[in-house]
Image (tube, rainbow, N blue to C red):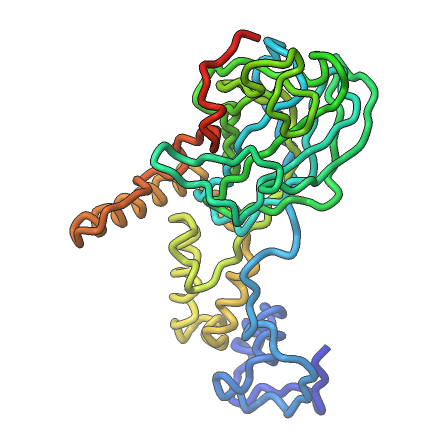
Length: 352
């Protein structure tokens, strides 16, 4: 929308140079916006109503790439009961700014359903890993609605407000039904270290709840422990991914092919015979900023190798400086436990 007071002229450009220059109309427009940066005096004076976009590059995408993730636990239907609690970790491998969890799906007799998520400010780190409180005051309810029975197909529980998680962050989800009886929600025994694992999230085994009361401490038969450890979530997660956008400060978070793209563009810009030489650095940065991390065929495996090397270097630096590191190299393989906070729940696990 930039308005120019008179037509553009090309002083000291021969016919061949003009043809080559006009072959890149997008670059011409960018040059108009940046005439002050490189002294392009052949462009006439212009009135700018807004700050130039290239000087205010965004750091995160304004769109969400939604990926439907189905948790494959082979649906053994080992158990059904009142609730299930389990941790979910947002992985810090790809250049992701945050993920947006929109809903979770479960099956069973269902009934009056609620979904809870632990509060961000609740302390959760202990020597044994990540531990979450089972006290109601430490949780936030994100869903409440009654549902009919859905024993063979998943029923989607869409949150009132999407849940945002950032790379490296772990949150615990608690799904519960107050329906009388022990057939409300289907879940499984623990069969592996991770219930589900993809490029963006890891879902870990947690615990089942055998009380009809939300966060209840007494099981429905009136004695024993209301929580059952080593249980797995059965269901489906729906979430979107918001990627980081390239900036010089974020360069190392991108893949090796993307690094080559940046160096190639900057090399062309510094070659006098290239039309790219007419563009200032900020203009090149803006072009790269609009490129998504996987447009140049960088793979998640290559980025994971880079991330592991970075974490290994950080660990070596910490050891060299004598600083004890509580978090070891591969953060994506952290053990996440669901141990109780209170000693009254340290009893031996009862048979279901």
